[in-house]
Length: 205
Length: 175
Image 1: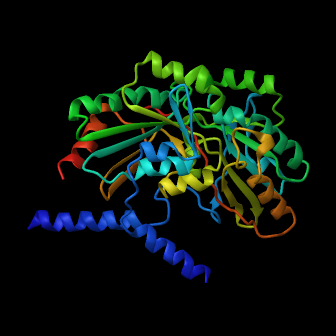
Image 2: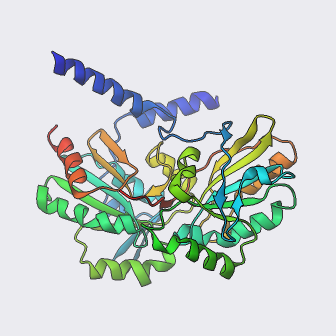
């Protein structure tokens, strides 16, 4: 009898997960207020969102040195910062991997990569890996577009940078640009969530 | 009208799908290409492989040669056919390597590691369409694995130890 009860409970749970349309992973959804942080930048200084008094919001991107998808997007991340930092939406890049698991993502390696590519934005180490789980980032690259509101930094868009990782020239939808443009023009963001393939965030098992 | 239409589509999708077994049919479609024996598909070309309705347990692993945790767990998937018998289990390795790396990385990797499981390369940039179509909860991180038999399906956005993988396989086989 007990097993029967357990079984029906289990199948009920299965049904729930099978038909739920919401991702079960934790983390922010569009409309949530994102946490601020104090993380070390490649120049040795600590960076927080609250340092940016004049910003209207932030393009927070979880990215790293070692993921081919992240590397494929480096130039486009630089372009996003060049285009939107002056308009009030700077890029804040956060490297979420554990460098002990992924040595290519050590602070030294981050410095080297940022210098070689000429990053114009902070490239922060998620020391202790406490920030990415709160955001709910699962991979690199993974974008969270935030808008400053009275309540705090509100999540407005989650997902990919655009719809073609292979070829920047073949992109048909610039998800992040469209979202920031909408915020700048006081319009509704059409696409607030997208999916893309990325590299899992590296943690000790 | 749009609502009715999507409802119809949902109903249709909900019905038991019985696509022809991939193989001869799927491979002659225009959404399939070949390169030195490597089958390259877009999502429409991959889809039939995710819905094979036979007596076998189907294990579909999404991986790439550049993905360290994927490469690490690959031997566990490779061992499945031997452990459980190729009559009862079918393993498909879906590579997400970049197309410009097929010849330089993927094919040499298959060769060097003498992969026994079927390998297919998925080349479809419209990820925002096919990721949720494969599983609504998949954020897009790899490794990821789909295990299914008949109508029972489970999706795993995680890497496996050999023990964990075998445990999942046994849960499917013992039903």
